[in-house]
Image: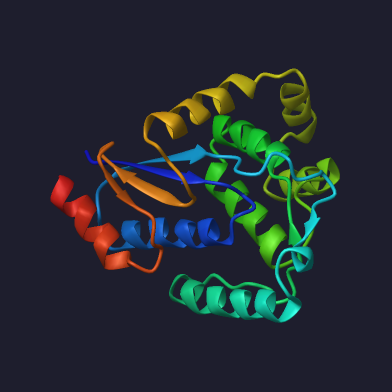
Length: 199
């Protein structure tokens, strides 16, 4: 079966759209094995987040999220145009490892993206991650115990090694059978065709 690795970060709005692409591929009957590889691109972002308006103008930021809404629309993914925070995603990525271990990765992941880009809540905060965990039925006490003990630190380290190995420079990146890289989320047909050709 074709292997598809998707390198992603929870603070990346394009990665939210990538989740819709993966679901659409499944609906279209494309056969593949999916691996979501966490890539924390900006670990230096403080836990309280960074104001996007300090990086881009307010008008430019609003325009960007309007455009993202158009890209996400075919996959029923929407964005709040008033998003103004770049989040620290570290704890969310660790919590994702716990969700994966109890077979709730997809629903947890979707809710993290929605919380960040629709509800505009800071996914860098432990309390917000806890709320998401409770909402999707995770054992939050066990999740936090595992995170705080460092249980998932090695998994992130291994993911970073894959980033280096495959020379991943941005997210999301679709890597098909460890060979073909596609980074443009607007190229659904190209992604689909590349997976089918790799079978």
